[in-house]
Amino acid sequence: SYQISASRCFYLPNIALSGGTYDEFNASDIKRCCITCARDHCCLGYTYSKTRKRCYLKSAMSDSEINYEAISGLKANTHSGQGSFLKNVKIEGGATAEVRFRKPEECQQFCTAYGIYSWSPPSPEEEQEGGHCVCMTRIQSLQYSYGSRSAIFPPVVSIT
Image (cartoon, rainbow, N blue to C red; front, side):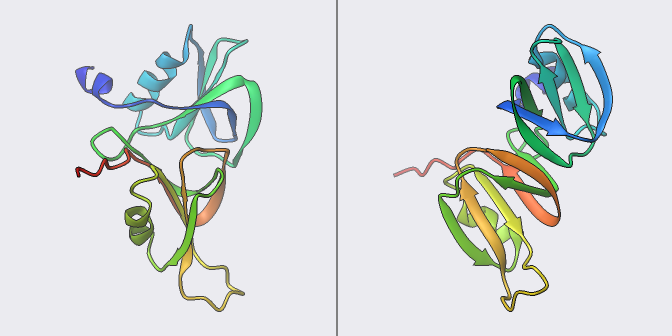
């Protein structure tokens, strides 16, 4: 259990993740959701109801909604437990930079200073070669989007 404390819990206040619930349990606070999710390989994230004091574990998500009595969280599964990688999920949250890249890896490198990136492949009707890369510093919503790649990762502090 000492490994769990080393990994971060990524909390998304006032956001409820829709769909994909595979388990639920009573919990006095959201920390229990984070610990349980970290130990379960099926778990991608969770939503905690503050009024019901209940955790809803998610193995997938369709989208998210604003809900002032909820807090959601994402599993720390990358960057040695300091980041969260999401496959087939698109994040929206006030883009601070947008650019086109062919590969999601290029997008992640470009967005290093921001802490969040979301890359989506070009839509079939687009003539463009590259996908859409968006860098963000906060999350407003998440949604299932086939082919998309997103991640929250520790911003790299440049040593000057």
